[in-house]
Length: 254
Image 1: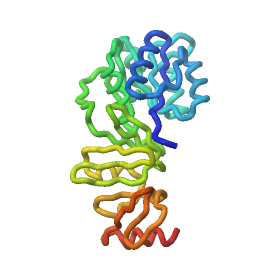
Image 2: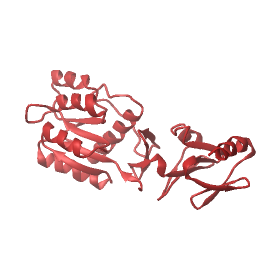
Image 3: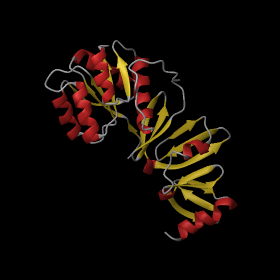
Image 4: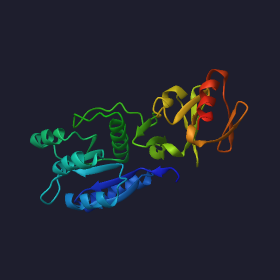
């Protein structure tokens, strides 16, 4: 399994708007798993796709269940982060929308940057277990800002202004180089202008281990060791004196 595109379900009954959103997101390397014109169809698609990462839901939908009622079901049964799409500023509607705690909003009409930022904001809020309380607020959000998010069994890593879902088991090691950090996976590398310690904080302690001031390794990716060197993938990674006892104690007990 390689790194995966973030998977998005669009729930919008105006097909031209839905297709426009799908095209915009596909262009920035997100994967559209489906477009649903009703809440009923959305729920059918959820049961067929158990790895949806995020949903875009229009507040006003045709049928018995509107977007807010659908969001309640999503919260209760599926725990998938969702973004509300709306062109309505009706006070009662906004108050109802707030009660289901969306992770972001997109106001129609919108542009590429607004859609991209909303997706990113929703993922950040979901990872941090926070919600958006205001329908419209100024976002001091830098599109080039470094973001490393842990959601379920994956890291969501930023690449060319979009996120990619990288299963934790696909990560081999992390390497520090001054104020930069490289996350090496089985298929590629992600380079961040942040210190290793900040990314390390997002990793589960039972799976990732600091072995050197410049290296954190995925324990399950170590395929051997010799002297003070661990073999991880095609790379030999040094173990420093500070970490030597803890590291080799672990591997001797496997």
